[in-house]
Length: 108
Image (cartoon, rainbow, N blue to C red; front, top):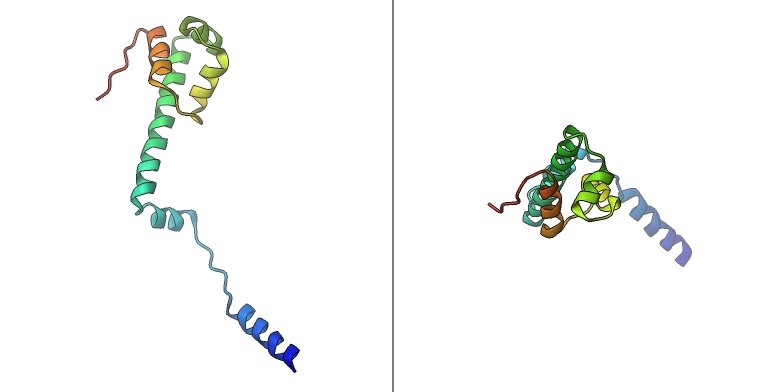
């Protein structure tokens, strides 16, 4: 008789479990209200935007990653990581890359 009772409890528990599916938009809407998420999202989009700007500046200048890296005094892999936007970069690295293009880094 004990086994039947346990089986009934398991069945009740399983039948009460209902999967609810959310779209990406619904999930984003929910988490975007969180202040920590908002800050992280802002930082992530800024890093991706900067990476895109560096890549565009390099390609419009007709330079390869290798040439930019040599002129900045760093390995080509650093330029590739910066342009990939997957990693943050130091102000020093950004400044070296900016110098290659005759630009200056200003904090506003």
